[in-house]
Image: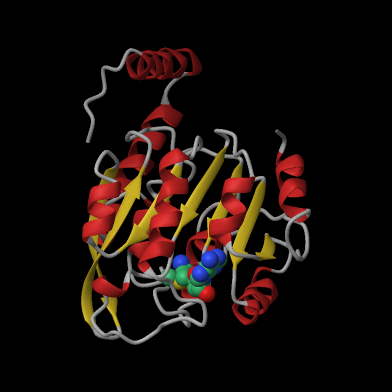
Length: 261
Ligand SMILES: C[S@@+](CC[C@H](N)C(=O)[O-])C[C@H]1O[C@@H](n2cnc3c(N)ncnc32)[C@H](O)[C@@H]1O
């Protein structure tokens, strides 16, 4: 299914805005800090973006301020699903022509589409009530435990790469037991919290946007310096030698010689 056809499938189900056709990212400082649970918090966007596998269509369900979509390298097509029309209107204005914004219940809409492997779905649903520091509602469309169960049933059956972020909870621990996960600290209005990201695919070097890999700011800088050093070394080689080195690297990766992690 082409990006256009995938978008069309969603178009028939939602109220949509402008088509996706953009190549630039939005500055990290403008990634939608206003939404509770925004992933614009220091380091969160980078950690999530550095896990995204290569994809041509990106879907951000439960979009809110869509910090990840704004920060990452754009895909050929980006679809944002947000149930709150007010939040969606703000998002449309911020994204301009970079994404389609659908006002819909993503728990209902996602199971209707057969998403091919070239689609990557990032989900940042409302936190479970049991994992919050206060019992108050955060969103106009907040979730019951039954909503989380319905959402997890879809995620476990999905045939494309899916990433889910949230706080630790017993339900997610049990339901996503077979999934790979990472966790990291994030600053919140009520102090530091531990954010988890679960994904249904193995660790891969075929990343969509490898420019943000690293465990912290310092680690990311170290990796950037290393990448620049290796690029300079390769650029300085005679073309034949460079081709031989690149082929050796590619074939050792194909043969699985690279240690994971
Ligand atoms: C945790 S926030 C997402 C924050 C977002 N990742 C960001 O960077 O700003 C969850 C969002 O999901 C929206 N939402 C709640 N239920 C939804 C549903 N069933 N379908 C789509 N969006 C929903 C809420 O209105 C809220 O904006």
